[in-house]
Image 1 (cartoon, chains in turn orange, brown):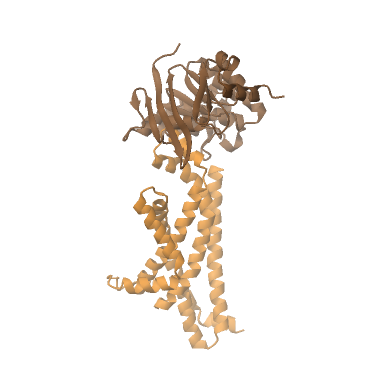
Image 2 (cartoon, chains in turn orange, green; image 1 turned 120 degrees about the vertical axis):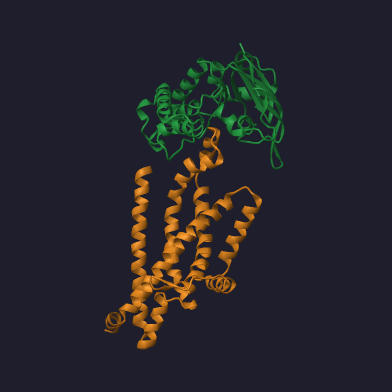
Length: 226
Length: 248
C-alpha cells in the first residue's frame, strides 16, 4: 500500500513538519489569547476610544481572509529585525511574521468569545457586587469572571482547534510546517493522495489530543465550582 | 419617633431615553424609619429605590445622604454603597461562591476585614437568618426563600446604615414568602432603617412606620399605615387599594 510505504519512507518530513505546526500553533494560541483578552476588555470598556478601536479591529479581522492578512503582515512588517536563527528546527525569520499574523487573527475571535461569555453572566451579579461597595474591577474579578470562564472555555477550545488547522496556510510563506513538507513529499513521490491522507491523520490526532486536554481542564473547573 | 435625616430626596427625576419614569420625587427618610413603597407596576418604585444607591443615575434633582449630595460629581459611590445595603427581587447571590463566601467576600475585599473576623460575623448573621447549617452550600442548592435570606445576611454584613429591599418576595413561591418577611420584620424590630418596595400589603400595613403610594413616577400619597390603608384620600390610592386588597 502506497500510504504505508510513503509514511515509512518519508516519516521524517512529516514529523518535522508536525513539530513546526505544533510550535507555531502553541505560540499563536497563547499570544492570541492574551491579545484577545485585552481586546475583549477594551470592547467592554466604557472609554469611547478603546471601545471603538476594538470594534474596528474585530470587524476588519473577521471581514478579511486570513491569507490576505498573512501577506499584509509579512510585507508590512518586513522592516523588523527578525532573529536569523532556528528554534527547534523552525526558521524564526519566516515563522515570526506568521505567528504575529495568526495571533492578530486569533485574538479577534477569542475576544468575541470572551465578550459573549462575560455578557452571558446575569447583570444582577454585577449589580449585587457593586451594591456591596465593590469597584467595577473587583466585581469583575471575584464575581463575574469566575462565572464567565465556564461559558468561555468550550467556545475557546473550538477556537484553539481551528487555529491548529489554520496554521496550514503558513506554508505559503515558506515555513516548513506539516503542509509545506507534505508538498515536498508529493514532489518526491508524484503520488499526492496518500500524502494528504497522512497529513489529515496527523492534524486529526493533534486536535483529538487538544480536545481531550481541554475536556479534562473543563471538568476540573466544574468540579471546583459546581 | 424619627431620628436624624438619612436620605433627603429633592425633585428626583429619572428618564430612560424619552421615557420619564420618575417625575420629581421629594421625600425624607430618617434613621429608624421603616418605609414601604407600594403602587402599580411601572409606577417607578424600583427605579426610585435603585436611585438611592445609584444603581440608576438620576437625570435630575438631588439626593442627600447623611448631609452629602450623592449626585454630585466626584462623589465616592463605592463608599456610599457600603452604607446602603441592597436586597434584590432575584436574590443575585454570587453563584460561584458558597453561602458563607457570599457573606464574607465584600467584608474582606471592600472593608478589608481579616478573614477570621469576617467568617465569625458571617456565621453569626447566617444564624440570625436561620441558615447556619447552609454555610457550605452553593446558591444553586438553596430554595428561593433560603437564597433571599442569605442575600439579606450578605447585605447586613457591611453593617449598612439603611437597607433597601426591592420587591424581596416577588420572585418567591407563596409558601416561602413568610419566612423572608419574618426575617425582614425582625430587622425592623431591631431598629434597622429600611425602605421596602413591596406588593405584600399586609406586611406594609403591619411592619412599616410609613407607607408611600407611588403612581406614574410620583408619590401620590403617603402617611402612616393606618391612615393610608384605612382612610386613603387620593382617588388613585383608593382605586389601587381596592384592586389589591379585596381580591376574591
